[in-house]
Image 1 (cartoon, rainbow, N blue to C red):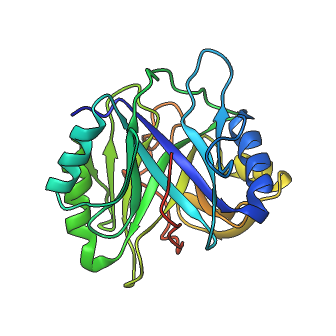
Image 2 (spheres, helix red, strand yellow; image 1 turned 90 degrees about the horizontal axis):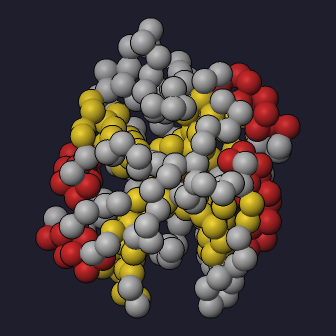
Length: 265
């Protein structure tokens, strides 16, 4: 079982879908694909020719939405079996792909790999490169072990105990941040961008309609025009790592977000 690509989903309600598409295409310098799905609920954010898509938008039927992760494999049944052996629950099975729930309750999808191999470029000094899984304290160790075992990626421990990073092999577009929340609340997820200059990126995002929420030592929390919370983090957008002068291996603030309904690719 091999994970060959990853995709981050922006999950938003129908009435906010157009706002989400407009904002995230501007942020990532992409264009929206034709809709697909039984209710035209899925779109892909297509980068310029020569790069492969790794960000998608989903219309959710209920709730405020959030984010979720797709793991792409040439052996979807093998990936599903591995996840179930490690403690995941299968929520739905479809032709060629499946929706699963992690031990802490985070929804994600196992989907086919279609040959993607080229990361989209850095855009205006930033890159969407991380999905943060926000985990209640009582489930944190089990959840961290699940994702580390499932992906087989290198596990990095931050200088603060509430953060760990799973760093994928070179060429894959998204890292996984495992964030331990302060309180017992449902597992959820949000997106992070690596930024060479947080202030400059924040200004650009605010011009596009984002709203400032909070600041941390090496991060800024924003809300997009569709209501979703995400983070700008002070990391190298090429490598994903912190600058040499920084003292932490991971950076986002604790963000309270709510889980989306069952995702689909």
